[in-house]
Length: 213
Image (cartoon, rainbow, N blue to C red; front, side, top):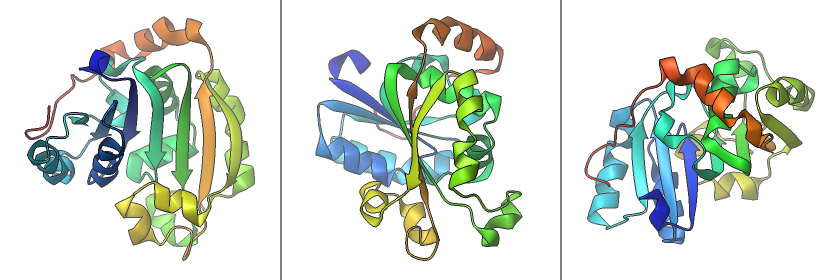
C-alpha cells in the first residue's frame, strides 16, 4: 500500500481520526495513517473512510510507546496534534521511548510537527504549565534520540484550525489557552537500525481498525 502513494503522513495520537479523513480527501496521492491506542475512538472514521472509498486513509491501533515496526522509516511527515495522556507527557518531557519512536517513523530528513498546550488547569494530567522556554529545553534530549528541533513558536489560530483537530476545539486551543508549535526533523540516517533495535522487543503489530484498508 505504501508504495502506491507519492508520500506518507502519520498522525500519531489521532483521536477520532477526523483530521486523517480531511488530509486523505485533500490529496488522494498521499497515504495518511492515523495511529492511536484507542481503537473505539477511530472506529467511526474508519467506517467513513470505507464508505467514502478513501483508499488512502488507514487507521492503526498502537500506543506511542509500542509503535509497530511496519511503520519504521515510512513517513515523509509525522504530526502530533494536541496529544493527551501518556503521549503528551512523553512529548513534553522528552521520554526516550516516545521520542525515539517518533524518530523511527520518519524517513531521514523528514518533518515532525507537534502542537501542544498545557496550562495551570491541566495539573491533573501530572504536568505543570509549559511555556516556550520549557519547550526550547527539549532540543538536547530530542537530538540525543534522533530528532533535531528547528523551531519553537506560539501556534497561530490559522495553524491550529489547519490541524482539523477535534480535541483542539474542545480545549479551546489558541483562544481560551495558549498553544505551542514545535518543528523538527529526523536527524541522522545512520541511527535507523539502532533505533529499531532499541524497541524491537516492545513493538506491537499493526492492527487496522474497522473496514478501511
